[in-house]
Image 1 (spheres, rainbow, N blue to C red):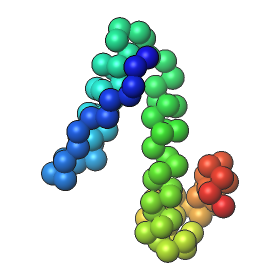
Image 2 (cartoon, rainbow, N blue to C red):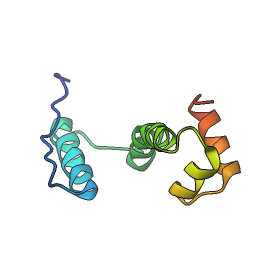
Image 3 (cartoon, helix red, strand yellow):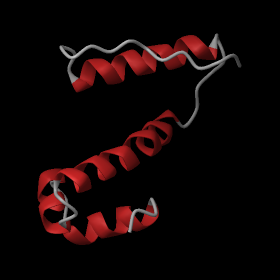
Image 4 (cartoon, rainbow, N blue to C red):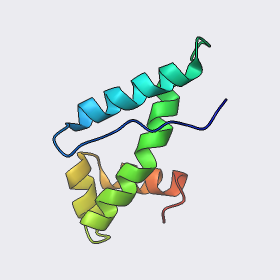
Length: 86
C-alpha cells in the first residue's frame, strides 16, 4: 500500500467528524480490499493517545483522570499497564 494519506482536520470539526473523516480515508486507502477487526483496530489506535492526553491533563493524578474518563481507578490502572504507560 502507498503512503498513508492523512485527512485534513480543522478546529471547527467535532471529534466525531474527525473520526468519521479518518475512517473514510482508511476505507479509501483499502482500495476495495475488505476490512476486518475494525472495532479492535480503532480502539487500539485511539485508547493510548486518549489515556496519555487525559493523564497529562490530570497532571498525572489517576483518580482525577479516571473521573474525567468515567471509569474506575482500577480500570484506568489496568489500561495504563496494558499500554505500558505506568
